[in-house]
Image 1 (tube, rainbow, N blue to C red):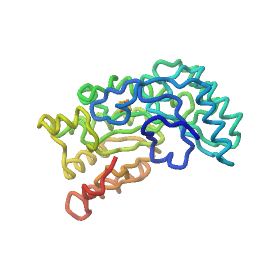
Image 2 (image 1 turned 90 degrees about the vertical axis):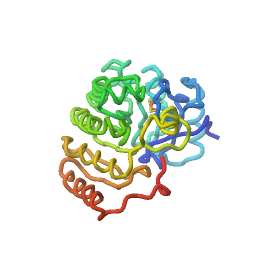
Image 3 (image 1 turned 135 degrees about the horizontal axis):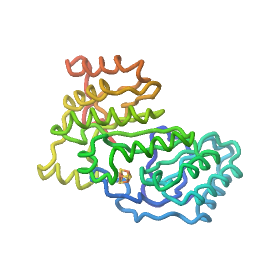
Image 4 (image 1 turned 135 degrees about the vertical axis):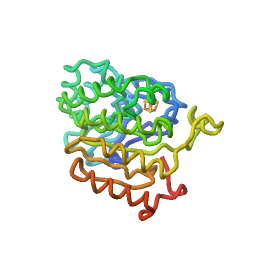
Length: 290
Ligand code: SF4
């Protein structure tokens, strides 16, 4: 059996990937909206335990084409630790076509460009990076731990290493008073990084978090579908990410959007305008999920 500690999260695009935990939890674990790893104490798993899981997977699966390295920021382990894991993957799964991982901004920034270059050469193909917002005010409020500039720098280092970059942002994170700033600055940060993939989620509360408590106690206003559509429209109107695949078709989104920027931007804006005019239905709360 492959060992999984606690709930294991993965991006939607890793639904068919072999998932192995390189780390347990998230080294930051302090974002006020995030409930993913709250029950876990962050640590890097010993190499032998990770290799044991890969050996077990080799016995279980004849063909493994995609591998996702979990948890929250697997890239936080030392570069040599990750390099050894990537070498082992190459040895045990020569058929594997893609290895990806979550990477917190800090996990990228603590590495040198040469280390990231080497990790890419050893087979690390893509990093999922959480921008959440391009507004420093919003980032400080949610306790992200980095500024927008630092996150952009991390994203550009990933790209300079030759890896693909997938960036996530969250609509509604600045509530109404910071909505405009959140949308415009997020568009600016994304435009500077021009990631291969952009995922826009919508803020949703399921399990207790500090931000959820603020909402329950009246200190945070959770934006409604109309306000979220208006904010997303502002973001799309300000974005310049030629070639980026843009997706807001996650279970948390009220209006599903998908397209390639900048070509499909106007069509996505049109869909949002139609939703605001009542011609496209917003997803009901009952069907939303994280
Ligand atoms: S860095 Fe990511 S996984 Fe860690 S607490 Fe923040 S949002 Fe959650």
